[in-house]
Amino acid sequence: MTYMTRLDKYRVIIVDDIGYVKKTDAETQVLFEFIAHRYESGSLVITANQPFSEWDAIFPDNIMTVAAVDRLVHHATIIKFDGDSFRKKEQQRKKSTKQNRPS
Image 1 (cartoon, helix red, strand yellow):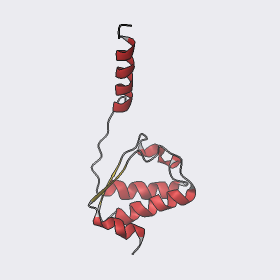
Image 2 (cartoon, rainbow, N blue to C red):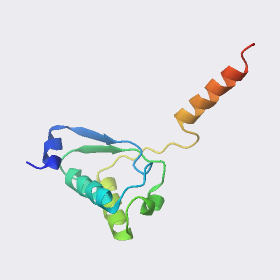
Image 3 (cartoon, one colour):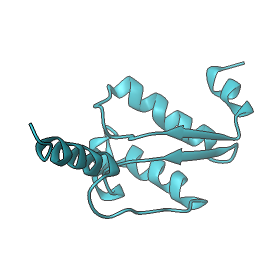
Image 4 (tube, rainbow, N blue to C red):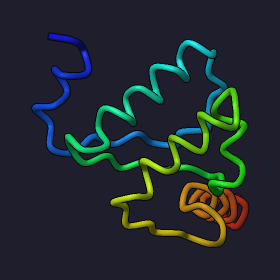
């Protein structure tokens, strides 16, 4: 049993912030294989700060990018959020609260 087929027991797998850390070509190849494997076998939730048009920075070549995005969007429900991230807003709120405290 391969590592990927072991993950088939999970109905949903979440990959958070897919483009946050630069990946090696080998890691990106595994990521693509994982997306291709999950394409028809289970649900995959992916979060990203980049629109699909900027995913060439995630995958090493355009062909792999197009193939990965094609598999992801084929059965997808895409939810797009505009504006500042929740983490950034919370950080700003905490900073503002800290500055407004009496000494």
